[in-house]
Image 1 (tube, rainbow, N blue to C red):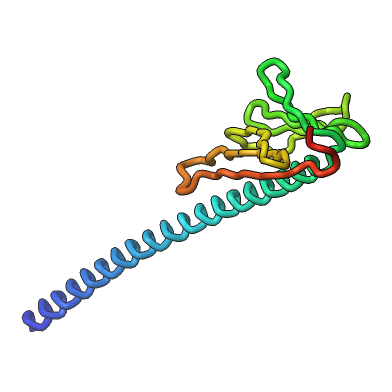
Image 2: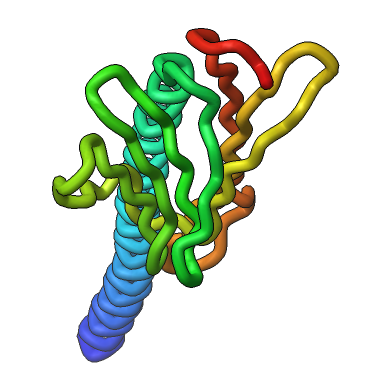
Length: 168
């Protein structure tokens, strides 16, 4: 009788150890699953932010190209203190672009407020590119990296030709 009683206790002890091992394995697997899920959510957020930055940049680039194309006189670069301004004469005034403190600014009409055309810019340069028969304008732009490192450097180049005036 004692032999049966100790044998069943031994089996219960082994079953208890099996349960504890299974619980530990389950906790480990759930911990790994939650970690993977959290990382997936973070990657999704970063991807969404990158997509938003790219769309915003493309929209600003298309607006800039449209402003250059609508110029009624030759666009020109002007130095104002430490800033470089791109002046685009339009039928209703002069549209101005500048880069200040990591933000590309646009002024649609003289004596109006500067409007944020593109935030989060690391570098912005608008250049005149003289070709054999036409003057082309180029906007080279680098966006700021978000938190952490990016695998790709966010660089953009927009090109436009002012078509409503004669080349000097």
